[in-house]
Amino acid sequence: MKCASLFTYEIDEKEIALEDINRQLVEKITLEENSIGIIMCHPEFILSGTLKYICENLPFEVVGITTASQAVNGEAGELILTLFVMTSDDVTFRTGFTESLLDGLEQPTRDAYKIASEGMNGEPKLALRCPPALIKYPGDAFPGIWSEILPNTPNFGTFAVDDTVEFETSETIYKEQTSKEKMSFVLCYGNINPRFLVSSLPDDNLLQYKGEFTKAQGQHVCEINNINAYQYFEELGLGTDGVPSNSFLFLPFFIDFRKSINYDGIRVMRVLLSFTDEGAAVFRGNMEEGSHFTLSRYTAGDVNATTIELMEKINKMENVNGLLSFSCIVRRMVLGAQSLDELENVKNSVNQDIPFMAGYACGEICPTTVKEGAIANRYHNYSVVCLII
Image (cartoon, rainbow, N blue to C red; front, side):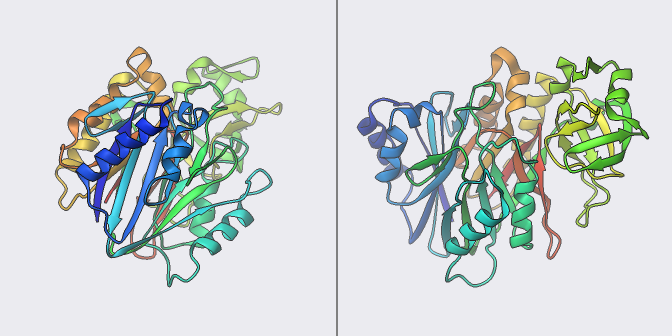
Protein backbone atom coordinates (compact mmCIF):
# COMPACT_ATOMS: atom_id res chain seq x y z
CA MET A 1 0.00 0.00 0.00
CA LYS A 2 1.25 3.47 -0.92
CA CYS A 3 -0.33 6.72 0.28
CA ALA A 4 -0.08 10.45 -0.42
CA SER A 5 -1.74 13.57 0.96
CA LEU A 6 -2.70 16.43 -1.36
CA PHE A 7 -4.35 19.82 -0.87
CA THR A 8 -5.55 23.05 -2.44
CA TYR A 9 -6.67 26.39 -1.04
CA GLU A 10 -8.20 27.48 -4.37
CA ILE A 11 -11.98 27.70 -3.91
CA ASP A 12 -13.18 29.76 -6.87
CA GLU A 13 -10.82 28.90 -9.74
CA LYS A 14 -11.63 25.23 -10.22
CA GLU A 15 -9.11 24.67 -13.02
CA ILE A 16 -6.31 25.98 -10.80
CA ALA A 17 -7.51 23.81 -7.92
CA LEU A 18 -7.38 20.71 -10.12
CA GLU A 19 -3.91 21.69 -11.34
CA ASP A 20 -2.78 21.94 -7.71
CA ILE A 21 -4.03 18.42 -6.99
CA ASN A 22 -2.69 16.86 -10.19
CA ARG A 23 0.75 18.43 -9.78
CA GLN A 24 1.09 17.05 -6.25
CA LEU A 25 -0.27 13.68 -7.34
CA VAL A 26 2.45 13.32 -9.97
CA GLU A 27 5.13 14.54 -7.57
CA LYS A 28 4.19 12.35 -4.61
CA ILE A 29 2.94 9.01 -5.86
CA THR A 30 2.73 6.59 -8.79
CA LEU A 31 -0.70 5.04 -8.98
CA GLU A 32 -0.85 1.25 -8.95
CA GLU A 33 -3.64 -0.99 -10.21
CA ASN A 34 -6.22 0.03 -7.59
CA SER A 35 -6.62 3.48 -6.05
CA ILE A 36 -9.08 5.39 -3.85
CA GLY A 37 -9.25 8.92 -2.46
CA ILE A 38 -10.58 10.09 0.91
CA ILE A 39 -11.55 13.73 0.52
CA MET A 40 -12.39 16.46 3.02
CA CYS A 41 -13.22 20.09 2.33
CA HIS A 42 -14.78 23.24 3.69
CA PRO A 43 -18.41 23.56 2.45
CA GLU A 44 -17.38 26.56 0.32
CA PHE A 45 -15.76 24.11 -2.12
CA ILE A 46 -19.20 22.59 -2.73
CA LEU A 47 -20.91 25.95 -3.21
CA SER A 48 -18.30 27.08 -5.73
CA GLY A 49 -18.50 23.88 -7.79
CA THR A 50 -14.78 23.24 -7.32
CA LEU A 51 -15.26 20.00 -5.39
CA LYS A 52 -17.47 18.56 -8.14
CA TYR A 53 -14.99 19.59 -10.83
CA ILE A 54 -12.05 17.99 -9.02
CA CYS A 55 -13.92 14.76 -8.34
CA GLU A 56 -15.09 14.46 -11.95
CA ASN A 57 -11.52 14.74 -13.23
CA LEU A 58 -9.59 12.50 -10.86
CA PRO A 59 -8.33 9.09 -12.11
CA PHE A 60 -9.97 7.30 -9.15
CA GLU A 61 -13.16 7.43 -7.09
CA VAL A 62 -13.44 9.46 -3.89
CA VAL A 63 -15.59 9.46 -0.75
CA GLY A 64 -15.51 11.90 2.15
CA ILE A 65 -17.12 14.69 4.12
CA THR A 66 -17.17 18.41 4.71
CA THR A 67 -15.33 19.57 7.82
CA ALA A 68 -14.28 22.70 9.70
CA SER A 69 -10.47 22.45 9.66
CA GLN A 70 -7.98 20.08 8.08
CA ALA A 71 -4.31 19.26 7.91
CA VAL A 72 -1.98 17.30 5.65
CA ASN A 73 1.80 17.13 5.53
CA GLY A 74 3.08 20.70 5.80
CA GLU A 75 -0.34 22.39 5.79
CA ALA A 76 -3.15 23.15 8.24
CA GLY A 77 -6.09 25.45 7.57
CA GLU A 78 -9.83 26.04 7.43
CA LEU A 79 -10.68 27.12 3.86
CA ILE A 80 -8.89 24.13 2.38
CA LEU A 81 -9.60 20.92 0.46
CA THR A 82 -7.50 17.87 1.30
CA LEU A 83 -7.22 14.50 -0.42
CA PHE A 84 -5.68 11.31 0.96
CA VAL A 85 -4.79 8.81 -1.78
CA MET A 86 -4.31 5.07 -1.23
CA THR A 87 -3.05 2.89 -4.07
CA SER A 88 -2.08 -0.78 -4.27
CA ASP A 89 -1.73 -3.75 -6.59
CA ASP A 90 -3.07 -6.19 -4.00
CA VAL A 91 -5.87 -4.24 -2.30
CA THR A 92 -9.25 -3.81 -3.99
CA PHE A 93 -11.46 -0.83 -3.16
CA ARG A 94 -15.23 -0.82 -3.55
CA THR A 95 -17.24 2.36 -2.91
CA GLY A 96 -20.90 2.91 -2.12
CA PHE A 97 -23.52 5.55 -1.43
CA THR A 98 -26.77 4.82 0.39
CA GLU A 99 -30.16 6.19 -0.50
CA SER A 100 -31.62 8.76 1.92
CA LEU A 101 -31.37 7.72 5.57
CA LEU A 102 -34.14 10.04 6.79
CA ASP A 103 -36.70 7.23 7.04
CA GLY A 104 -34.39 4.58 8.46
CA LEU A 105 -30.80 3.36 8.47
CA GLU A 106 -30.86 -0.39 8.07
CA GLN A 107 -32.42 -1.09 4.67
CA PRO A 108 -30.60 1.67 2.71
CA THR A 109 -27.32 0.54 4.29
CA ARG A 110 -27.86 -3.13 3.48
CA ASP A 111 -28.93 -2.29 -0.09
CA ALA A 112 -25.86 -0.10 -0.70
CA TYR A 113 -23.53 -2.74 0.74
CA LYS A 114 -25.03 -5.42 -1.49
CA ILE A 115 -24.36 -3.31 -4.58
CA ALA A 116 -20.84 -2.29 -3.54
CA SER A 117 -19.72 -5.80 -2.57
CA GLU A 118 -21.13 -7.61 -5.61
CA GLY A 119 -18.66 -10.18 -6.93
CA MET A 120 -16.36 -10.03 -3.88
CA ASN A 121 -15.71 -13.09 -1.71
CA GLY A 122 -15.79 -12.81 2.06
CA GLU A 123 -15.74 -9.74 4.26
CA PRO A 124 -13.50 -6.76 3.57
CA LYS A 125 -10.44 -6.23 5.79
CA LEU A 126 -11.47 -2.62 6.49
CA ALA A 127 -14.56 -0.45 6.05
CA LEU A 128 -14.31 3.35 5.92
CA ARG A 129 -17.56 5.17 6.79
CA CYS A 130 -18.71 8.74 6.12
CA PRO A 131 -22.21 9.19 7.61
CA PRO A 132 -24.21 12.45 7.52
CA ALA A 133 -24.77 14.51 10.67
CA LEU A 134 -28.29 13.24 11.34
CA ILE A 135 -28.79 13.97 15.03
CA LYS A 136 -32.14 12.12 15.01
CA TYR A 137 -30.23 8.83 15.29
CA PRO A 138 -27.87 7.77 18.08
CA GLY A 139 -24.34 7.93 16.73
CA ASP A 140 -23.55 4.31 17.50
CA ALA A 141 -26.48 3.15 15.34
CA PHE A 142 -24.20 3.57 12.32
CA PRO A 143 -21.32 1.28 13.38
CA GLY A 144 -23.97 -0.96 14.96
CA ILE A 145 -25.63 -1.67 11.61
CA TRP A 146 -22.31 -2.26 9.88
CA SER A 147 -21.23 -4.63 12.66
CA GLU A 148 -24.38 -6.67 11.98
CA ILE A 149 -23.64 -6.77 8.25
CA LEU A 150 -19.88 -7.31 8.64
CA PRO A 151 -19.24 -8.72 12.14
CA ASN A 152 -15.54 -9.40 11.47
CA THR A 153 -14.66 -6.12 9.75
CA PRO A 154 -13.19 -3.13 11.61
CA ASN A 155 -15.04 0.13 10.96
CA PHE A 156 -13.37 3.53 10.88
CA GLY A 157 -14.81 6.90 9.90
CA THR A 158 -16.18 10.31 10.63
CA PHE A 159 -19.54 12.04 10.57
CA ALA A 160 -19.83 15.10 8.33
CA VAL A 161 -19.44 18.45 10.08
CA ASP A 162 -18.86 22.13 9.34
CA ASP A 163 -18.19 25.37 11.20
CA THR A 164 -21.84 26.35 11.81
CA VAL A 165 -23.67 25.95 15.12
CA GLU A 166 -26.19 23.38 13.85
CA PHE A 167 -23.93 21.84 11.15
CA GLU A 168 -26.53 22.83 8.55
CA THR A 169 -24.03 23.02 5.65
CA SER A 170 -22.33 19.69 6.41
CA GLU A 171 -22.49 17.06 3.65
CA THR A 172 -21.12 13.68 2.72
CA ILE A 173 -19.23 13.18 -0.56
CA TYR A 174 -19.40 10.32 -3.08
CA LYS A 175 -17.59 10.80 -6.38
CA GLU A 176 -18.97 14.12 -7.67
CA GLN A 177 -22.16 13.92 -5.54
CA THR A 178 -22.85 15.43 -2.13
CA SER A 179 -25.70 14.88 0.31
CA LYS A 180 -26.99 15.88 3.75
CA GLU A 181 -28.82 12.58 4.23
CA LYS A 182 -26.79 9.80 2.56
CA MET A 183 -23.77 7.83 3.74
CA SER A 184 -20.71 7.17 1.59
CA PHE A 185 -18.27 4.36 2.29
CA VAL A 186 -15.26 2.36 1.09
CA LEU A 187 -14.75 -1.40 1.43
CA CYS A 188 -11.11 -2.53 1.37
CA TYR A 189 -10.35 -6.14 0.35
CA GLY A 190 -7.00 -7.87 0.19
CA ASN A 191 -3.56 -7.29 1.68
CA ILE A 192 -4.23 -4.53 4.20
CA ASN A 193 -3.48 -4.60 7.93
CA PRO A 194 -5.23 -1.64 9.60
CA ARG A 195 -4.30 -0.57 13.13
CA PHE A 196 -6.24 1.83 15.33
CA LEU A 197 -5.64 4.23 18.19
CA VAL A 198 -8.20 6.19 20.25
CA SER A 199 -7.52 8.88 22.82
CA SER A 200 -9.83 11.14 24.76
CA LEU A 201 -8.64 12.55 28.07
CA PRO A 202 -6.11 11.56 30.72
CA ASP A 203 -7.39 9.45 33.62
CA ASP A 204 -6.23 12.09 36.09
CA ASN A 205 -8.89 14.43 34.66
CA LEU A 206 -11.68 12.30 36.13
CA LEU A 207 -13.91 14.09 38.63
CA GLN A 208 -15.54 12.79 41.79
CA TYR A 209 -18.99 12.50 40.21
CA LYS A 210 -19.74 8.86 39.47
CA GLY A 211 -22.94 7.00 38.88
CA GLU A 212 -24.83 4.08 37.41
CA PHE A 213 -27.54 4.24 34.75
CA THR A 214 -30.17 2.35 36.71
CA LYS A 215 -32.92 2.89 34.13
CA ALA A 216 -32.12 3.48 30.45
CA GLN A 217 -33.50 2.81 27.00
CA GLY A 218 -31.84 3.76 23.74
CA GLN A 219 -30.42 7.29 23.94
CA HIS A 220 -32.47 8.06 27.06
CA VAL A 221 -31.24 7.64 30.62
CA CYS A 222 -34.29 7.89 32.88
CA GLU A 223 -32.68 7.22 36.24
CA ILE A 224 -29.19 7.54 37.70
CA ASN A 225 -28.49 5.85 41.02
CA ASN A 226 -32.25 5.14 41.18
CA ILE A 227 -33.31 8.82 41.03
CA ASN A 228 -34.63 10.90 38.13
CA ALA A 229 -31.74 11.78 35.79
CA TYR A 230 -32.51 15.51 35.66
CA GLN A 231 -32.87 15.63 39.42
CA TYR A 232 -29.48 13.94 39.76
CA PHE A 233 -27.75 16.58 37.63
CA GLU A 234 -29.72 19.44 39.14
CA GLU A 235 -28.46 18.46 42.56
CA LEU A 236 -24.92 18.66 41.17
CA GLY A 237 -25.61 22.18 39.93
CA LEU A 238 -25.48 21.05 36.30
CA GLY A 239 -29.07 21.68 35.32
CA THR A 240 -31.48 24.61 35.65
CA ASP A 241 -35.13 24.95 34.61
CA GLY A 242 -35.07 21.59 32.85
CA VAL A 243 -32.07 22.22 30.60
CA PRO A 244 -28.36 21.38 30.94
CA SER A 245 -26.08 24.17 32.10
CA ASN A 246 -23.70 25.64 29.53
CA SER A 247 -20.85 23.70 31.09
CA PHE A 248 -22.39 20.40 29.98
CA LEU A 249 -21.06 20.72 26.43
CA PHE A 250 -17.55 20.60 27.82
CA LEU A 251 -18.29 17.93 30.42
CA PRO A 252 -17.45 14.53 28.93
CA PHE A 253 -18.94 11.30 30.21
CA PHE A 254 -16.68 8.25 30.42
CA ILE A 255 -19.07 5.30 29.93
CA ASP A 256 -18.25 1.73 30.91
CA PHE A 257 -20.41 -0.47 28.66
CA ARG A 258 -19.86 -3.59 30.74
CA LYS A 259 -23.02 -5.34 29.52
CA SER A 260 -22.03 -5.23 25.84
CA ILE A 261 -21.55 -8.58 24.13
CA ASN A 262 -18.15 -7.38 22.86
CA TYR A 263 -17.23 -5.47 26.01
CA ASP A 264 -13.46 -5.02 26.10
CA GLY A 265 -13.04 -3.00 29.30
CA ILE A 266 -12.30 0.24 27.45
CA ARG A 267 -14.43 3.24 28.36
CA VAL A 268 -16.15 5.25 25.65
CA MET A 269 -16.98 8.94 25.84
CA ARG A 270 -20.43 10.43 25.33
CA VAL A 271 -22.01 13.88 25.20
CA LEU A 272 -25.29 14.84 26.90
CA LEU A 273 -27.59 16.69 24.50
CA SER A 274 -30.71 17.62 26.48
CA PHE A 275 -33.45 16.52 28.89
CA THR A 276 -36.95 15.34 28.06
CA ASP A 277 -40.02 16.83 29.75
CA GLU A 278 -40.03 13.79 32.02
CA GLY A 279 -36.45 14.45 33.09
CA ALA A 280 -34.70 11.76 31.08
CA ALA A 281 -31.16 12.63 29.92
CA VAL A 282 -30.74 12.38 26.13
CA PHE A 283 -27.26 11.35 24.99
CA ARG A 284 -25.69 11.34 21.51
CA GLY A 285 -25.34 7.55 21.65
CA ASN A 286 -27.27 4.65 23.12
CA MET A 287 -26.92 4.09 26.86
CA GLU A 288 -26.96 0.61 28.40
CA GLU A 289 -28.85 0.08 31.62
CA GLY A 290 -26.42 -0.95 34.32
CA SER A 291 -23.48 0.87 32.79
CA HIS A 292 -21.34 3.06 35.01
CA PHE A 293 -20.07 6.54 34.19
CA THR A 294 -17.52 9.05 35.43
CA LEU A 295 -17.41 12.76 34.60
CA SER A 296 -14.24 14.51 33.48
CA ARG A 297 -12.87 18.00 33.01
CA TYR A 298 -11.65 19.23 29.65
CA THR A 299 -9.07 21.93 28.76
CA ALA A 300 -7.18 23.11 25.70
CA GLY A 301 -4.02 21.69 27.24
CA ASP A 302 -5.68 18.27 27.45
CA VAL A 303 -6.66 18.41 23.76
CA ASN A 304 -3.14 19.24 22.61
CA ALA A 305 -1.39 16.84 24.99
CA THR A 306 -3.47 13.79 24.03
CA THR A 307 -3.03 14.48 20.32
CA ILE A 308 0.74 14.87 20.59
CA GLU A 309 0.92 11.66 22.64
CA LEU A 310 -0.94 9.76 19.91
CA MET A 311 1.36 11.06 17.19
CA GLU A 312 4.40 10.02 19.21
CA LYS A 313 2.97 6.49 19.51
CA ILE A 314 2.46 6.35 15.75
CA ASN A 315 6.02 7.54 15.12
CA LYS A 316 7.29 4.49 17.03
CA MET A 317 5.25 2.02 14.97
CA GLU A 318 6.77 0.00 12.16
CA ASN A 319 5.53 -0.29 8.58
CA VAL A 320 3.40 2.85 8.62
CA ASN A 321 2.35 3.72 5.06
CA GLY A 322 -0.24 6.35 5.93
CA LEU A 323 -2.40 7.90 8.64
CA LEU A 324 -5.99 9.13 8.83
CA SER A 325 -6.87 11.08 11.98
CA PHE A 326 -10.28 12.48 12.96
CA SER A 327 -10.98 14.59 16.03
CA CYS A 328 -14.25 15.61 17.68
CA ILE A 329 -15.42 19.11 16.73
CA VAL A 330 -15.88 19.92 20.45
CA ARG A 331 -12.11 19.58 20.87
CA ARG A 332 -11.80 22.42 18.38
CA MET A 333 -14.34 24.46 20.36
CA VAL A 334 -12.36 23.91 23.56
CA LEU A 335 -9.29 25.39 21.85
CA GLY A 336 -11.19 28.67 21.35
CA ALA A 337 -9.21 31.35 19.51
CA GLN A 338 -6.38 28.84 18.93
CA SER A 339 -8.69 26.53 16.98
CA LEU A 340 -5.93 25.25 14.67
CA ASP A 341 -3.61 24.21 17.49
CA GLU A 342 -4.58 20.53 17.49
CA LEU A 343 -4.08 20.14 13.75
CA GLU A 344 -0.84 22.10 13.92
CA ASN A 345 0.29 19.62 16.55
CA VAL A 346 -0.52 16.73 14.23
CA LYS A 347 1.36 18.41 11.41
CA ASN A 348 4.40 19.16 13.55
CA SER A 349 4.49 15.94 15.61
CA VAL A 350 3.98 13.12 13.13
CA ASN A 351 7.05 11.96 11.20
CA GLN A 352 7.12 13.86 7.93
CA ASP A 353 7.74 10.71 5.90
CA ILE A 354 4.27 9.47 6.95
CA PRO A 355 1.56 10.74 4.56
CA PHE A 356 -1.41 11.85 6.66
CA MET A 357 -4.73 13.64 6.59
CA ALA A 358 -6.44 15.00 9.70
CA GLY A 359 -9.74 16.78 10.22
CA TYR A 360 -12.72 17.30 12.50
CA ALA A 361 -15.79 15.11 12.95
CA CYS A 362 -19.32 15.25 14.36
CA GLY A 363 -18.66 11.93 16.08
CA GLU A 364 -15.87 9.45 15.46
CA ILE A 365 -16.08 5.76 14.47
CA CYS A 366 -13.17 3.55 15.50
CA PRO A 367 -12.68 0.11 17.04
CA THR A 368 -11.43 -0.08 20.60
CA THR A 369 -10.41 -3.70 20.11
CA VAL A 370 -9.64 -5.70 16.95
CA LYS A 371 -9.32 -9.43 17.56
CA GLU A 372 -10.27 -12.50 15.60
CA GLY A 373 -14.01 -12.87 16.13
CA ALA A 374 -14.21 -10.04 18.66
CA ILE A 375 -14.09 -6.64 16.98
CA ALA A 376 -15.49 -3.85 19.13
CA ASN A 377 -16.53 -1.15 16.64
CA ARG A 378 -17.43 1.93 18.67
CA TYR A 379 -18.86 5.41 18.25
CA HIS A 380 -16.97 8.11 20.17
CA ASN A 381 -17.45 11.71 21.31
CA TYR A 382 -14.74 14.15 22.45
CA SER A 383 -12.05 11.81 21.10
CA VAL A 384 -9.33 11.72 18.49
CA VAL A 385 -9.18 8.49 16.47
CA CYS A 386 -6.44 7.25 14.16
CA LEU A 387 -6.25 4.69 11.37
CA ILE A 388 -2.71 3.53 10.68
CA ILE A 389 -2.23 1.80 7.33
